[in-house]
Image 1 (cartoon, rainbow, N blue to C red):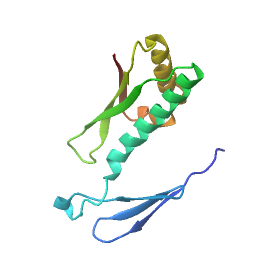
Image 2 (cartoon, one colour):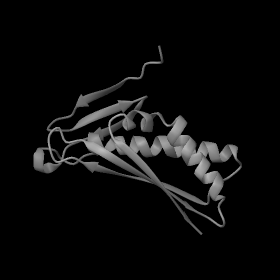
Image 3 (tube, helix red, strand yellow):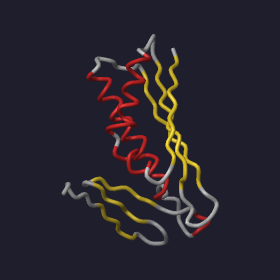
Image 4 (cartoon, rainbow, N blue to C red):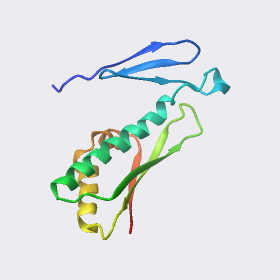
Length: 140
């Protein structure tokens, strides 16, 4: 059996909660239209940050081993939200954006594919419930 991970929430009134993950605290909250105070992000979009962060860390780690350091690197994630309850994401698109002078496209593609196909646990879990696509954008 693998290592157990835990997180906790403390209610802070209205629809606000303080989340703690590995000693890091942050607020999550609801929109004002549903009784929140907009003190932090909503829980569902945090999954997008987890997905972006997981694969971004993989890509940078793999590129570092290939002795490639991009001048700039961004990861954006878009998700399609269903209309019916329970509203959920049924498709994700990950955009990997690289900027730099003549970046090695072959190594970038290899790093992204390794993250998606082998290393990113968040992608692996979410792919069981939704379609995940990715696109690589390279700008000089």
